Each structure stands twice: as structure tokens, then as C-alpha cells.
Image 1 (cartoon, rainbow, N blue to C red):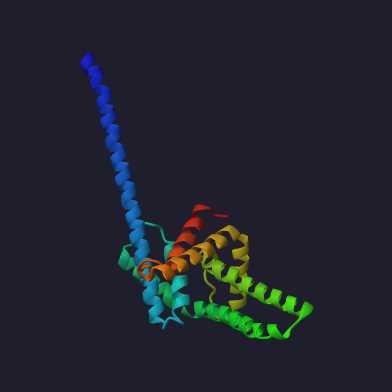
Image 2 (cartoon, rainbow, N blue to C red):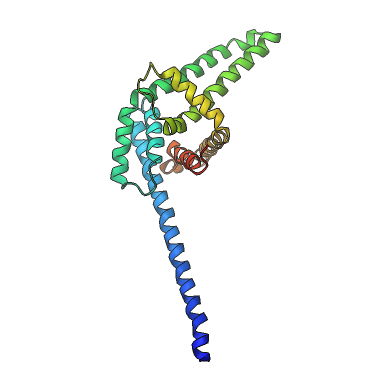
Length: 223
């Protein structure tokens, strides 16, 4: 009787140990699957950017990365992810480039206006500097809020006709989700610093990584 009683705790301990091992293995499989999915998404972003000649490819690739990252974690193989990416890339090509060109236009105007600063003095110089800085901040917030806004509200139907509404929505969403915008900005800065120090990380890090992070934070902490 005593032998039977002493065997029960041993059996229970073995069952708990086996259960812990299964839980650890399952968690490890999920982590490896998520990392593989993220790497595939990064490679798709690189391929899409190169396919658009970099200048015309970075916008559509980034928008497609956000949309594909919003899919369920276990949804689709690498081939299915590539197909979904290609569809999102093709459909959003004109819209994403219109948005990027608007952002580039703001930067170009600010850069051109900065050439006038040495010729300005007093209040006019202070006001001009403030206006230029404000324009850059507004553009940055809109750029960081564009991806999550597309995932949340969908892409505009027309590239140029809906551009003002898309810019306004991106900016307002970036402000409404300011902690998410700030985290994305920090992630981009950290990624840029890491790539400058170790260029080889470009094989695994890129805007698609930030897109996946933003989507993860958006779905984990919805507004």
C-alpha cells in the first residue's frame, strides 16, 4: 500500500515534466515559425522593392508588407504569402507611390526652403524654422501612421483623387496611436543604426520587420 502511495507522486511528477516539455517544444515551434514567416516577408519586401527599381518599389512593398503581416500567424505557406504579397503589391502600386511622392514633395520643399534660412533674421527666421520642423514632423507622423491605417481602414480606391483623405487619415491615426507611432520610429532608428554597424543584417532586417512589429502591437493592444 505504501509502495503504491509513493508511486503516485512520482507518476504525477513525470506527467508534469512531460507536459512542460511539450509546452516548451510547442512554444519553440511557434517562435521558429514566426521568425521564418518574418524572414519570408522581408525577402518579399526586398524583391518587391527591387522589382520597382527601388524608387517606385519601396512604397508598394512596404504597404504590401503591412497587409500580409496582418494575416493570421498560421495562415498560409511561404508560397501563399508570396501570392498574397504580389496581389497587394500590384493593387496598391499606384496608391502607395502617390503617397510616397507626396512625402518626397514635402521633404523637397522643406529642403529648398532651408536654403533661405541663412538670409533670414529675427522673428522671420524663428517662424520659418518652426514651420519647416513642423512640416517634417507632420510628414513623419503621417508616414508612420500610413501602414497601420491601411490595415485598420483599408486602402483608398483611387490613387490621386483619394490622396488627401489618405494623408489625413494616416496623420490622424498616427496621432491617435501615438505610442505605436513612437515605437515604430524607435524601431526604425534602431534598425538603421544596426544596419550601419553591421550591413549584413540587411539579409534579415528591413521595413517589413517594423511592419510586422506594428501589426503585432496593433492587434495585441487594439484601440
